[in-house]
Length: 344
Image 1 (cartoon, rainbow, N blue to C red):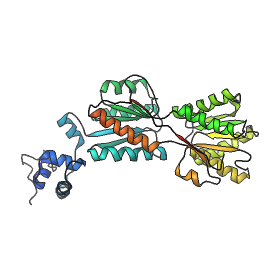
Image 2 (cartoon, rainbow, N blue to C red):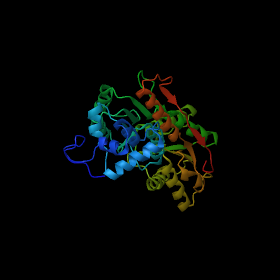
Image 3 (cartoon, helix red, strand yellow):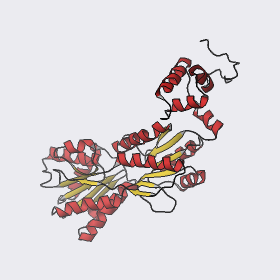
Image 4 (cartoon, one colour):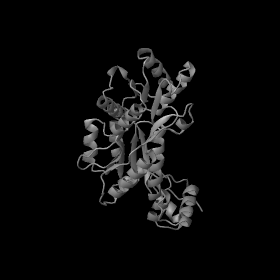
């Protein structure tokens, strides 16, 4: 079939192939072609294949900005996370994608590197594309970002944290309760000198520490000298370094709760190097239960977080908000699980 002429009534001034041309070649309506290319599950598989073949033959690439202008609404959902190197958020994003993509929604991912200013810029830029919905991580952001989200009227679901304020929809678990569970577990094992080690220091890390502190205060075992916090990015290497630093200052520590599994894994490796017996001398508990934690030496005890379930439920809740359906539970607490292994 000859290439469309630039003065064809369905062609744009740029001469680039258009959705109308794809639809004509596939023998379907432009609406069906659009839905097929977006992966809407209601379109028959045979039609999807015809439309995609036509698009490939023409070299068609969708223009989301033009589509948003034409319909006054895009087919995208914006998801903002603080890190793409943290397995926690990778698992959450995979679950979100698995829910939204079959509904024909494009997932636009923004990484704000634990910076509230970066997140504000991302929110400002993405809202210009008129997304169908927002999935945001936690509640710690600039006042300007909060006002933009509220004023936009775009449906929004918050992930990882819980907030019972009227009008908010969130899916997560109690970070404070998780920290308390770690402390109670170590106290139940007869440990008295207990430390909390945290890095990155985002709001969730601080809330875990707050829960740990509350449980120790209740038991009369809290010592502020046994809190070691740093704003540096969490990593295995940093975990080993902080472990050495803590033991140099507090050699009588009996148990440590690390705010992230990578820190705890680094501590286990450093203990192995130094010949420090875990858990005989020091018990260690991590957070997030990363896949590798069950294979450490010794196997790492950790708080398992429902990261995939949070992504899936948050996406499902957002779909309901977009469709205008009522939400029975605006605050969804999915809980957590303490995985007790050899390190404690």
